[in-house]
Image 1 (cartoon, one colour):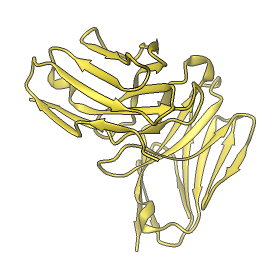
Image 2: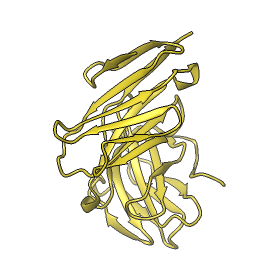
Image 3: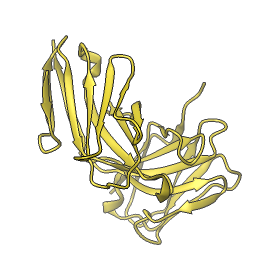
Image 4: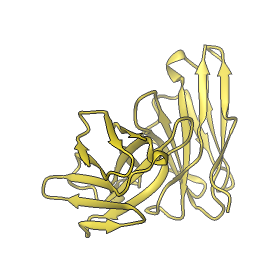
Length: 113
Length: 113
């Protein structure tokens, strides 16, 4: 698989490979982090979340890793499929800030058949 | 069950006109959020309701923007004297409580000519 930071907006992977999407967040007070997937013409779709008292959480084919020391979040997608092609956003939330989410810029994941 | 719904899906208006955008949250969700998404960017927070009251309206860009949620369910985002710069996708999200997972609707694409 390949990894990319938010400074590179597009990630291209071969179908079946693992994908790693990285995100650097800015607010050290953030205590809740979410990954959303957005397909063209649709609203963001919840993928997985993690709270600051954890450093790893697994879902179906997806894993989120949180490193609070360096304020870094990553999304790992196992066995990437064509249906995974979309824009992926990380979002952070500070529960003390009335629950509004602050979104990163987004990364386009393109899956090659 | 049904997700968040938004109407209309597309709205084209002329500069200076008034528009209303509607959001129907997931049944039972007490928290409702409005975000705005410009092309190639992540969603940006506008306003957050807890029940009928606006708990945080710090994201509204100016006094031409106003939102209501009179019965604690459906919400309407109102934009007066629209400007071309208001063109964007307006997204609504709802959650069970203030720090619950936010689920997004499909958005309303507003185009101001």
